[in-house]
Structures are given as structure tokens and as C-alpha cells.
Length: 218
Ligand code: FE
Image (cartoon, rainbow, N blue to C red; front, top):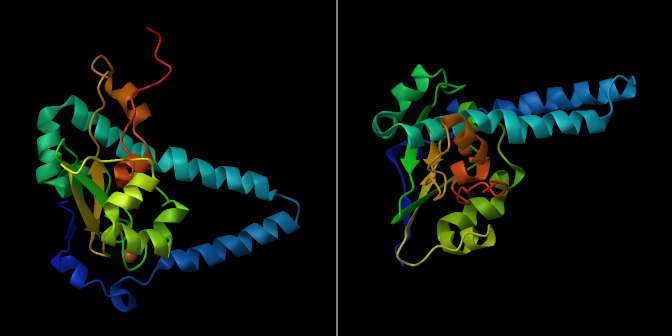
């Protein structure tokens, strides 16, 4: 067993009372108020709102990250730069921290599996992955993935052999992480656009692997 818990100097500065005022609570309160008003006035149904949120959560947001992953899989030079200077490369593509935070991309290999968490709250690479899933904000995930990552990943359906080292990256207000998942076998002939379609949000958080497309006609 070779689990490691990566702490960064950045995380020690993870002081939420000062420079991480959690504007999401402010915005979510505003959004809730607007939502209630629109429903009350009969302008919107809560089902319609749910479907918009779903769209942002599952389709729109993660697509940015998925495009970056597909590009890295297709272009080794881009991939090297992405891993070495994530910040500059992502900024060049128009993806940068909404609150000025930095983003680092970490690569999964045959021997290393990376998974991302924010142990103190819910820091997340929004520009790349959109809204974070509900489980990412749950205290259970935040505390357990650090202590027993192998077990938590197993619960997500990812059973890693003991020979694979698991690295847990703790996000902070200054530094957030995105996982570059492994390109699955059987995707050799796929274009960058096709590859982007199979990259999931959860694979870029590091709780699952990317699966090859199932509906391929052979
Ligand atoms: Fe946080």
C-alpha cells in the first residue's frame, strides 16, 4: 500500500475567513430567492430549473475540461506543456480562476492515480469542470478520501491494484487541481472531438476512469 496525502504550502494558507469568502453561498441565496419568485409568479417550474442546473453540472461545465483532456491525449507536446505549466496553458485557452486561483493538472499513469478533494470546504476548478457534484461537498467524501482513498474509490466502482500509488490532492483557495485521466484502450482511431465526448466530470476529479465508448459499431 502506498497511499500518500499530498499537502501543499498553499493549503496551509487555506484560510477561509479571509480570502475565500465563499461567494457561492451569497449567490445561491440570491438564486434561491429568484427561483422562488419565478415559480410563485408561474413563470418557471422547478423542473425547468432543475434541468438547467443539470445541464450546467453535467454537460456545459465539464466539457471545457474534457476538451483539454482530449487535446492532451491527441497532442503529446501540448500534454507536456499542460502538465509543466498548467496555468499558462489553460489561460491561453481562456480558462482561468474565477477568483484568481491557480489550476494545476496532474496526470494518471499505469502506476499513479490522482484524486482531488477540498478537505476544508469545496474548492473546485470551476472554469474547467463547472459546478461541483453534491458528493464532492459532503463531509464524508472530504474526510474519507484522505484517510482511505482506496476504499472510497472502490465505492465509486474503481478497484485499483495495490501496485498503483494513489495521490490525494487537497485543493485550496489558491490552488485547484484537475486530473488528466488515462486514455482508454480502443480509442486509437478517435478524433479529438470524439475523445472529448467520452471524458466525464468524475474522471477529471479522479474518482473513476474514462471508459471506451460502448456504442461503437464494429
Ligand atoms: Fe475549499
